Image (cartoon, rainbow, N blue to C red; front, side, top):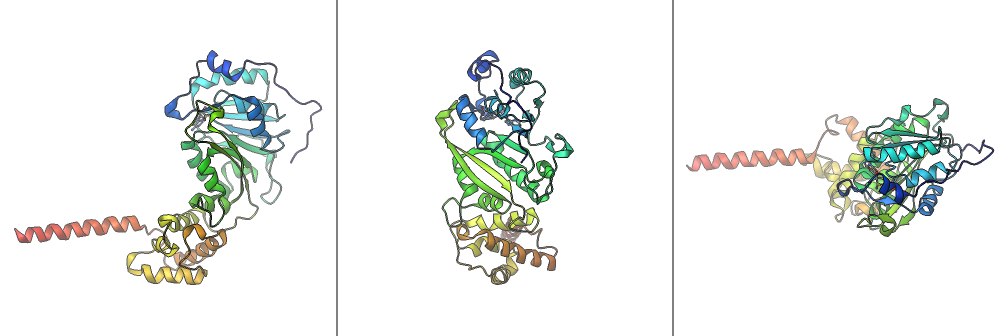
Length: 345
Ligand code: SAM
């Protein structure tokens, strides 16, 4: 990480409080957009400190809203902060912050789900994947319905080393509903172990670093909030395409409470299900009577490696979808019933 090249630390000049900004620009939280704001700057400072040393860093903040976390990031002596905010009502308040921090804050009125961060920061920041992480950080307190699809998209970007990871192993710190934060970090065998745990942990070192009680937000959300830090691993713990891993993991967790062979069986067409599931589990050396929550990342590595070989041998296998087969069987049965009915008449 880059050391401090600056002689004096930057501090924002005195500004209206976030509460005053909300009043001034009439920024009532939009319930339908799940907007919950952090007004306490000591808390936003604490959150930002957890992202690590941001001196001279290039930071991408997603969903800055009225700008609480934004202020704490600017006070952390960053080189540049780029914020992407979807709701245009927040832009004038952010502009006020930008005026108070000349040359440091870039504001984009846009959507994080489509914004291309890979072109936003200087090329010179790029590091080799095996090097220490670049001095580029992602920080965000997004609505829960955005942060979960976004982390899935970014995990796929980690596996392809594109998007925000064009700079190297860019670190991320994002908020989630507390239960989702627990799922992301859950160990093998724990109750919260899920598809998200495996998908995040095979690609990143994941830490649940802070829980923020719901009361800290205005308006108060129904649940507490977990802050999770992700650092992409130098070597993913499963070296297969993201979509293949996702398919195996999704199927394995299809029936969480049953033995794992039940869900994994859904990877195969009904006619060969029993035989192929047996082969998969035997070659991967995985006990069929483990529950999905008891499968470790190394179990998934073996399962994905064997499934990959099976897909290479049968090019139609990867496209197989058991829901499609169920649908087709249902409509065939319906046709038979209709024929019977016709003959009876
Ligand atoms: N970061 C602020 C804070 O902590 O007080 C605001 C948090 S609020 C939960 C989420 C913010 O993300 C809102 O300002 C909302 O408008 C913004 N947002 C929601 N969806 C977004 C998207 N797809 N792209 C960019 N911003 C989004």
